[in-house]
Structures are given as C-alpha cells and as structure tokens.
Length: 189
Image (tube, rainbow, N blue to C red; front, side, top):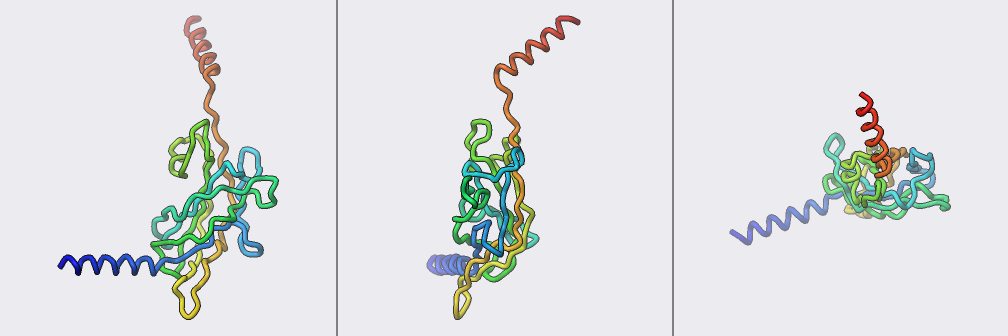
C-alpha cells in the first residue's frame, strides 16, 4: 500500500511539472515588449538598486511570485529601467499553452536604510518605493508541445509603470526640533 501511495504522489508531481507554462522574463523585446519602469520621484529609469519580480497565475485567479527577483539595468545603459536577463520562468498553476494573468512588481532594494528582499516586505514598510504594472493576459509557452517544444512566451501586453517615491524618515535632529517646538507651544499656554 505504501508503494502505491508513493507511486501516485510521484506521478502527480511529474504531471504537475509537465503542465507548467513558461514565460520569458524580459521587459524589453524589440518590436514586441516595451515595459520600462520609472522612478516617480525623478521620472528617471529604475536602476540596479530596484528589483522586479513576475507574479502570475490563472486568469481570474490568485497571482503568486514566479521565478526570482531581478535587478533593473542601470544608466548609462540604453536599457536602463528594463529587466533583460530574467530567463525562462515557469508558471506552475497554468498549463503550457494556456492563458495566464501576469504582473510585474517592483521595489527599492533599500528603503530608508532597511534592506528589502521582496515586494511584500517593501509594501509592509509603508514608505513607498513600490510599484505594480497593470495585469496582462499572456498565453504561456508550452515546453511539452509536440513535435517541437514551444518557446517561453514574451510578455506581450505588459505595460511600464512608475515606482512611488520613498517617504524619507525624519532625522533625529528634526524630531528633536519638533519636540522642542511643541514644548514651547505648550509652555506658552
């Protein structure tokens, strides 16, 4: 009985791996994709201090992070504000050749001196430095197509966006001056 359970579990894992759709994690593909990310504080392209990650899932379903976070290209590169080397990303909840809902989420790698490793962590800080694209519906690549495997799908339809400005933390001196001012106001009453 134990061997049957193990065999069925192995078959299910193999079947789920077989069914995954694939995406090409590149936000610039000449003539197909141009999803540049800008920093709203300056209007300049996001640079290597910003990270981006794809979130994908079934159309109308929950999106989850897929692949690994990638840094944006930095100026003076003509590709500043783009991710070009993300490689092939599998979407485990979408069968190959099926449509998926896809978003790009971006965040500052450091917000007010705090290192940030995920979009969710950056969002939890509540100090800006985050941004998210509009969702795009993309038909995934099918690596198991016969007789020729399909290539990962380019992110056609993904749009650029701006990352919110970071709200700076007040310095200790500023907080001290604010406190002293409040004490003077209270003392005059």
